[in-house]
Image 1 (tube, rainbow, N blue to C red):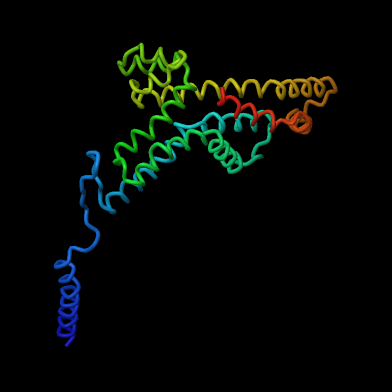
Image 2 (spheres, one colour):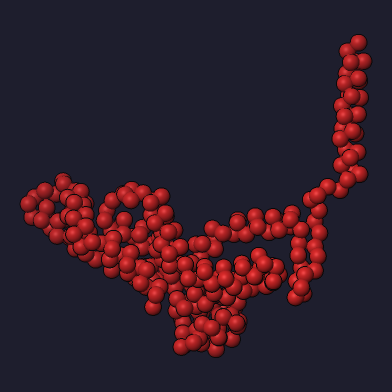
Length: 264
């Protein structure tokens, strides 16, 4: 009896699957991977392909934000400021990353506006293809990176990549970024830009460390002269460093200097 019931259940399940599978096999459904030519020699892909490309770009977005914008310099300087103050977890990482993100959006605003006008708007109006939009959108970003890349770093990666040295040298001359953008590939520009950003961030961090290091040295000398060697100098100097930073309007000076460093 149990075998009969089990066989009947298996048969019923098979009939149900066949009933649902038959319309699916007969009807291809609305989600089809197709492509069609558009004006200008481009290709218009179907919605599933566009969704796949969009999700792929979203996975690349964090790396693009870290390596192709001003985020690297800003977040490193803010982290070094926290180390110089001697506060272990204040401001917390979420505050530092959030502040660096919004400062990055502020600094990169003109570049993002150019990308929107030159790439997104024509692509949304189907005037250019997806490949043309990527090429048009990368040009303002390339010019921004070349503007803030040192000649030595650009020449280093151009030499390693066996590119023309004249292209790297022209990036530091007047009008060079526009000319070099057409010849240097992104695989050369991006690492050179990141290396220059790291150097600049460490230089700014060194200048931030000096006044707080002097306070630490003075406090340590005073404590040793008073025989209080068991008292931590870091604990005693922390209120003085915070007072100095607040009285000097440190946030205004530091953030203003960071933003102004990209306007030159």
